[in-house]
Amino acid sequence: MPCLNEAETIAACIEKAQTFMLENNIEGEVVIGDNGSTDGSQVIARKLGAIVVNVKKKGYGNASRGAIEASKGKYIITADTDDSHDILNLKLFIENLRSGFDLVMGNRFKGENKKDSMPFLHRYVGNPILTFIGNLFFRTNLGDFHCGLRGFTREAYNKMDLSTPGMEFASEIIVKASLFNLKITEVPTTVFPSGRNRKAHLRTFPDGWRHLRFLLLYSPKWLFLIPGFICMLIGMIGALYILFGSDSTNLKWIPLFSGLFLISFQFVVFYALTKIYATNHGLIPRRKSYNKLFVYFTLERGLILGFLFTLFGGFLYYLGFEKGIESMENMLKIIIPSIVIAVLGIQIILFSFFFSILGLKEEK
Image 1: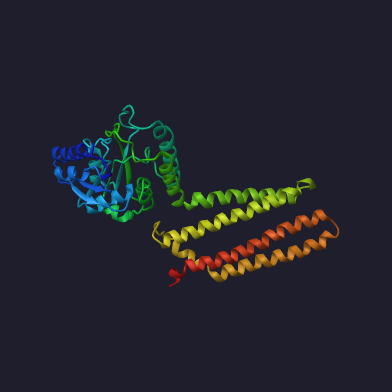
Image 2: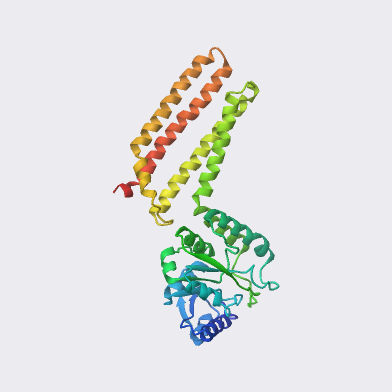
């Protein structure tokens, strides 16, 4: 359990955990990751027999990892120290872990709905939206992405290689479990109003943004690739419709659609480069198809393709001026696409060099 100035509630949390383990014949321990409490939380925890780990680096994620890495159990249950989690009823978590699941999430929306247990914005806006986005991006099927009460195996924790320092740690566990194809399930749990009198550490909008930012950064497909393809399709269809249409008044839209196409191509390029960087640095798991990527797409092939595009664009540009003598309309219909093709060729050349730089490790 992570802790920062929870003297009012930490005793109740520890005693509930110990009672559950005693009543269910579980050999276990209570480990507190203290994040610099100044209200005596550490003294209270030690008196009750809990292991207290001093975690200097601030943040919910840092404190949680500090406690987890100091523990010795095969199965790990995490909970907050504000006495809001139903720590006395963890049977479903333990049973599912023992049956072979790697991660067992609590679902507060399927449990008993206690009055004032969750702020209105969290229950009806923030959590549902972030849960929907998380399920969409990472192909999970969870009803509560951010319940602090969850269980996982030691093996799963080591495999996930968690690293986030703040509240987004809750999202990282699910995202990494999904990326590594771990077995995930969820069980109903009851959440209670916080037992403390002071204001909660959780900040609605800043921490909500941290979660959303993390989901986006770990899903370059949704951040870059899908928006890029959609905009490329719009730009291409729009430009072709105008180029082959008979209404010359629509020519003013060609630069807009052409610019949209080029920007969209940058989105697709960023997706590829982000995917390579994230894989090389262990941020996302390495797929079997990853190494084949460097076999099929090489620097030489990229340079040849980019050079051909640039050459063809230059030829069309010259042709446009020849046609322009007869008709300004024909000139615009040729010159603007020629510039787009030439710029696309240069972008392919630059992308090929950067792609090869990131792939030096694979070639070695």
